[in-house]
Length: 87
Image 1 (tube, helix red, strand yellow):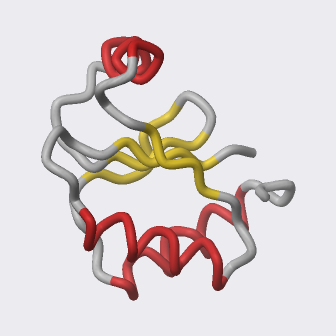
Image 2 (cartoon, one colour):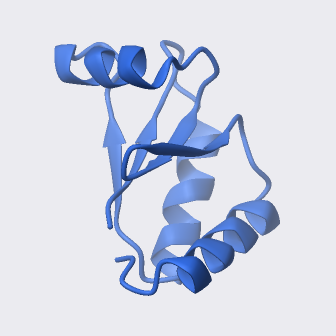
């Protein structure tokens, strides 16, 4: 499964670093999407997103805003339990 992070227009560097570190620690891949690209804008519209950063799993928003490192790790742990083939 593909975890994707959509940043806001103003780069949320701290949030991006937290998600990248949490994904690295738990051996999950993370694709960071640029909100200025047309394909990302289409995804934002499809998901009716208004809050960023947003973490997406498949076609589902699983987190919004800037997490703490602990809450990011906890969410990834919970996702791993419910999606055994997450990578």
